[in-house]
Amino acid sequence: MQTFSLIFVAALALAMATRLWLGARHVRYIRQHRERVPDEFKNEIGMDAHHKAADYSCAKTRFGMLGTLFEVIVILALTFGGGLQLLHDATSNWFEPGIARGVALIVLLGVIMTVIDIPLDWYRTFGIEQRYGFNKMTPLMFVSDMLKHGALAAAVGIPLIACILWVITVAGPWWWLYAWLIWVGFNLLMLAVYPTWIAPLFNKFAPLEDAQLKERIERLLEKCGFKAQGLMVMDGSRRSSHGNAYFTGFGKTKRIVFFDTLLSRLAPGEIEAVLAHELGHFKLKHVIKRMVWIFTASLAFLWLLAGLMNQDWFYTGLNVHFGTQPPSTAMAFILFFIVLPHFIFLLQPLTSHYSRKHEFEADNYAARHTAAADLISALVKLYKDNSATLTPDPLHSAFYDSHPPAALRIARLKDGKR
Image 1 (cartoon, rainbow, N blue to C red):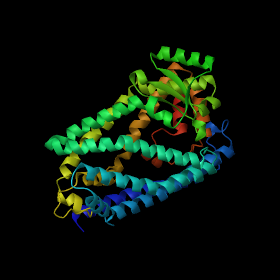
Image 2: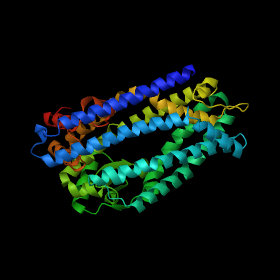
Image 3: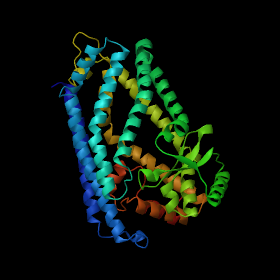
């Protein structure tokens, strides 16, 4: 086995072992605290709700651990098992060297991975979510969503793939910079068109009709200096009983969207506080900061890929051989995005910490513009309704969670920390 093969196997094993260890810790910690509701939640959350949250969190974590093992098996089958080599040989028989062959290779792999994921998605929806009373989807809706996502991915993804592969062939050694510019432009375009063209393919949106709530929200927006093109309600209850609110788009396409499930459970003051939290993300430029971080990282990754693309050991170390043919740029992309997550996995706590920092800042912003008590009561209801565990393992939470634990968020709000 080549040196790079050994390095990759070591990185894959380390990432897998860490994920399984963290998952086992998380389940064990939740089970140890299953019979006692944290003191700060005793008056709002009963033992039955606490049990449900604990069992739901454990079920999701165990399923995630099985998913980790399955993912590793698939990766080994694709690389050392010769799966990617078979796909390369097949597309080589179908197409001459060029963009069409590269697009076919990536699309073929995408279709195979989608088919592999269907049983997992099905069990997640009709097994775990159904068992704990969150799923509202029907099998027909599941299939319909899958076909819509597939059609959308093909309509948008195939031209993007073809464009980037074309840039690689004509732009010379600086192709990674031009490809990055295309990637940035594509993402900004998707942000602009998503609210009006893509989101309605999956959900129905209607203007907020509650006149008193609308007036209250508009006063908050004016106080915060925020302008939006619409206050919309989404029929999230068609698919799930989970509740949420979010912003989408930018510029003239910017919208505020409430799940109908959220509006049905929270009081007006609580809704206003949740919205103020989301406003905080925009006013404090969290969205822009995250986009800058993502775009900067993607530029670095494309630069790294440009260096690896011309190295024979990068392909042969993952059991891909081209014989007398030139290396496939499409295969380089595939291999890079297979191996990359496992080499950077241990950096996950840094991104989680950065995200949690933004959540604290958004909480503080909401507490300055609305009643902190309303945000606290809204958070308690949302944690209860979504069966989010109140007792996550601290290390697991620090590694994965983009939001701080409920107890910590509420304690800071009660203490008035800014």
